[in-house]
Image 1 (tube, rainbow, N blue to C red):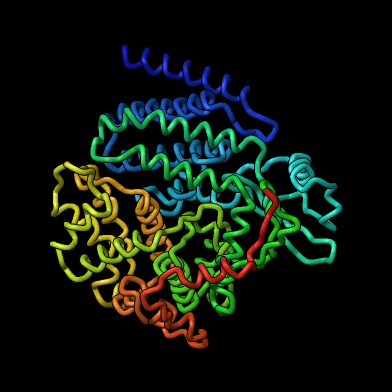
Image 2 (cartoon, helix red, strand yellow):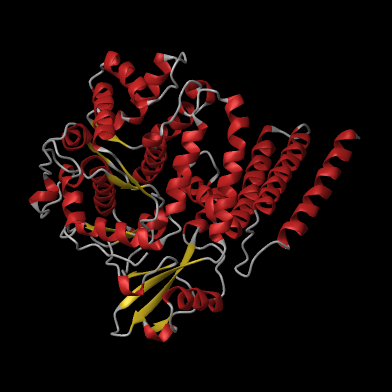
Length: 499
């Protein structure tokens, strides 16, 4: 009886939360109040607890086959609710859904499918709001910049939605328009995370939550200024200009502002269409292009894009990839990157003494705390396994081991410093994409360019792709990683916006 009364109380409370929070949405349908957003999440968690309690009660009276069916149905229902909630909440919660949708192989396929829509097709805002944002931010009528803007969006994502359009000269473009109020929503999410820090520190004293929250705030807050994104998008375009398999769309600075970003329209396949239709060779080329783009920009140019979900890639028939969305960008100081590379080289070389030394230098454990050296070693050996095992194939079994690595007992001593906070997110995400694309190769050969600051074949070179200019295929960076990016930034060719 007490179980029924408890479930009933929680259900009534949840309904109250839902009714109250829905009255706190703005014109774009986003819950912007920090307290209201917290209540929505509490309601979602409460519904999940009710569902789990009810599921466990039902499982007491059924056979093993029926238990699996009930569990799968519960996962799908939870994913449906999560997709609806995150899609309407936008901001940080939607980003979480985007990551889970492709990186969490523990979910049933139908449950992942419910979340995959968050990568490009969240609930959009009305075109009247879109027009209002464009005209207010650009300071003039829509017709002063655009011959036409499609009213139906191409995609609706976590911070803004994208519309196809034409400039006055007929150039085809896409216009990304920020949701009104999403800045307030994200600020509320960040404050909630910061408030939870002291409580989390009691449970996980080994983690520097203050530094993690500061880094998260810096990266996510920067995404709200599309002028920064336009600057970085053009930087990445120039870094890769002339590459036959890696493309970045051109930015149109005159039609770009803090909440409006206009860039070149590119035709291409979405990730799931490409996985379904492409042959094995095309997939292998695409996986290599993604690897070169991510790891070369990170280790050779000291900058990377911290949002690697499939909705940010456009694929083409020859396996080439166009990369879009440069809002979440991380830069490295040269000394910090050299420390990271020395740490990784120690792992590849089996040098546990140097590994242990750099655990402290990098801040992977808080000063003065004991830590399990075997578990730390095992965690990072797993991360770099593709680079020291010769011919490596990304398999479902390899991805499944990530869940074991991420268990609390295996990470109980670990602190993730700001420079490595997004590295693990990128690694797990890219591994999931690599597995779907059939990535394989002797990656041991490519680490010279990435971890040893020397010449070495690109991932595309490893799979036998011809016609890549020498400056991309063999990258002579010597001891000056980041030099090319600095030269581009000093050239005066990147967009400049009035403050």
